[in-house]
Image (cartoon, rainbow, N blue to C red):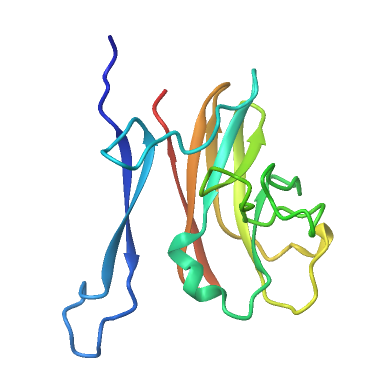
Length: 174
């Protein structure tokens, strides 16, 4: 029998309640993401398994939600692809908006991908008009992610402003 313990990721996030002069870490909170197993109420998996021969990049923008005021959103660019997430916003077709629909059982935007190494980045779009794929050029936080067939990789967008965004990635153990 395999290990039945849950696999979780703990995210340190700003709770936004630190006051000037307080301890440097006073405004931090913790968010738990359960990828596998059951931690006594929160259950994994983070998303349904990828189709045969494919992998998935699961993107969460929770750490920067408060930065998106007035923004039309954050977009994940995988190489030069503008493929939207499978559980994305159908009113914005053709763009990779980091968004998960209410019909989805995952908190992540799910981007299927071929196995291999991928250069991913994020674009913050702040115009009042929805972007086209060709307009999503101001890429930030570029990082390489290696995905194998059947594997899911969590990616989190983080940063201090919409002009200082980064990506952190971690594979989910299979």
